[in-house]
Length: 288
Image 1: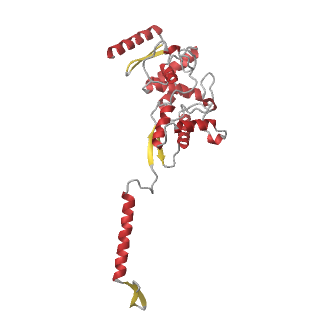
Image 2: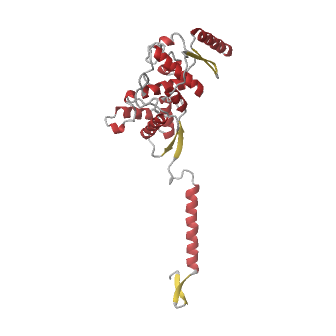
């Protein structure tokens, strides 16, 4: 028996009349559709939508920290992202390498730009690293990073190296500018940078305690022992540090020390600097 009967006529045309059984079937179908829609909307872990999360890299993080964060965000085994970076560096096909300057020699340190990145089910360590490097290139260009070395100046890569040191040594935009000027002044005078941050990077640590023995460490990142910039960036600088390295303010500063948080002192006089260092040491003893 059919559920739709042609039993009524109006104006010479037939009108379909739905039987009681047909109405019940339609109502049941509507309830079923609504139930499925609600189930899809309310079910946790809805498989219809891709997993979308965010990964934030703070300013100054080292590549090792970024690798670990990517591993965690993508839920892959520790070390997976670092291996992906090394594979990209060794790739014979240029299309499979990260878009780094030749001076970087495949090392993305300094080019894993501090920002917030989307992460979904299709994200891979390689794709996320590429996203970070491309973001760095765009941001650095926008901040005035020179594409080539300026006469008597630094190349783009050297500027990123300097910016990474600035990021590690200063906390405020104003101090970053002064630290960048100290770096330029020391380079111009052929003086070693003598930065604890570069030494710490070479030793794989982060500390305020630097001993005389540390300063004799045979490492290319020991800027007490070796003149010039360290061979690579020592972290991934943010916008303020990059702008400071690109255009440091004028000044004759050659020395600086953060006596206490919020109190960084810059000077061109060595004796004054020694007094500041002495105060720093005394302050640390008093607080320790």
